[in-house]
Length: 69
Image (cartoon, rainbow, N blue to C red):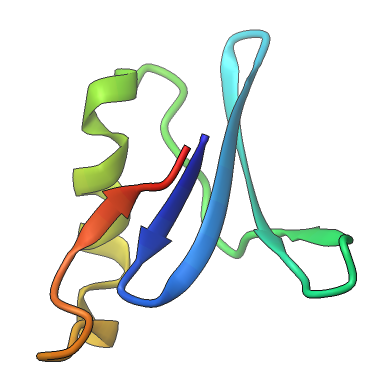
């Protein structure tokens, strides 16, 4: 899954019993995100969790978190 988080792209994948999150680069590579997603967090709560983590990045022209794919 990929999210637009107040202008930042975040990729989230389920790996076994855990979530893995990445920040994709323009070169096609990606690096691990700075945060950990609780393994028991349901998929439908990911957008809100990311919004809570990145809330300080919100601006009038970037007001929300949305799933891209």
